[in-house]
Image (cartoon, rainbow, N blue to C red; front, side, top):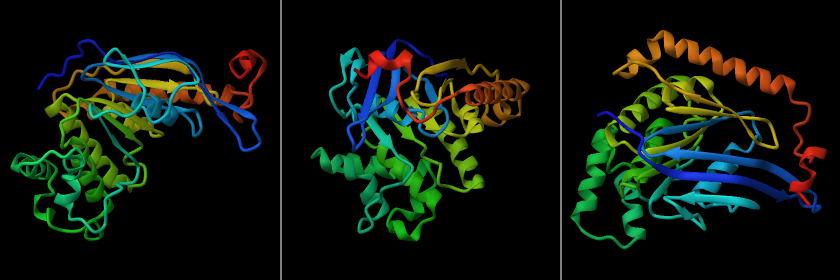
Length: 278
């Protein structure tokens, strides 16, 4: 499948996000951020811990609202979560008393969608991710990687056009993580979903991304937007190409320069940001 980007699915315009600490002191998490996400792309957000990349994803998903600026989904202002998007977190968050198939079917139950089509859909997804033999097993009987596959199946059940993924493989070992990178790339090629993906891992970003956004340490701003253009048909060709190696080096350099030249990282507003937190 050839995935093409046509039109903007998500947009953020001059977004500011301020959190209040327990003592009332404002913490500037995101400062005047603007970004558009095109249909069918994998947009990866990378940056140091605390740079606001998860906050940015949560704003797109409607789990947080901006302090200033506007976030839109399909041209409409985001006011909360919607059925047109699904989330995958670092933890699989499977219900331990439900089988894997029952966990995957949960979104249909919540939205009161009945019928055998959803069971068939769940079976199809479990087959696609190699979990068909474990459909009637319980989460405790599966490895961490298998549980995360199940959480991705659950997110795909209702066929939402957008997936938000917040470090979904961050807690897994390197071998399992590499395997799931490969599987996610294949799933994206097969479905053409729009994916917003948060990671600390630069290698993962280049493996998966159509574009990689590098963010500054807090307060988060967009430092670089990298187009990931690699002439490859397969995942193996992609990660073995010289283009991949060159992009990885460039991204590593960008992150190194940003983190080594940033003078403040505690979220306290500097003079240049003073107007944003008043």
